[in-house]
Image: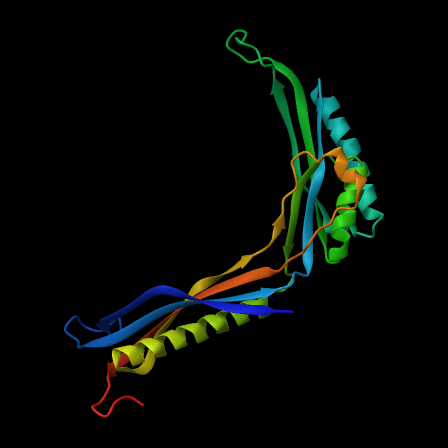
Length: 248
């Protein structure tokens, strides 16, 4: 179910500007009412991305990478068994870094390498949101010890963006009409429309960097929530004073 809300921005400017930017400096100025407003749409997500993998440490670089790769292959096999397609699984973090000994003084001015740390993390895109929990659980059972989080989103957000922009335009119009009545002026015409941009806010569940073994004891519950789309819009109206009998 879609829930749409609109929020009005605070900044409103009543001033005078040349009717067109190309007019000469001596041209008559035109009274302008400028209003800015926001509109928001909230819809249920239809896809999710899970990031999980393994962090391994060993005395040598080769041993650390081998251990990480073995665990990563086991994680991939477990995820594929859930019906996730190969094209929806992508390596997103592959690193190998030295570990330095915690010594009070460095030898010859250089820190001593005590071992190596390898990281292999995959991103799994899911169109079936009920697979998010099972993918996390399968990864942990296969040896994952790193969970970077779950991000929800929309495959196509055009309809939600249009709704947010429509709400922003409606809110700006209502604000302009309210101010015009209060200031006893008449809205003649819109002389400028400026879209302030559309932002998509996706809910994200952040897991711990190192997944705890206790997480494997029960199914992982994940709530998708809603995706928020926020749009802003500025309208500039040419205005004129109301006649003696008042504005209609």
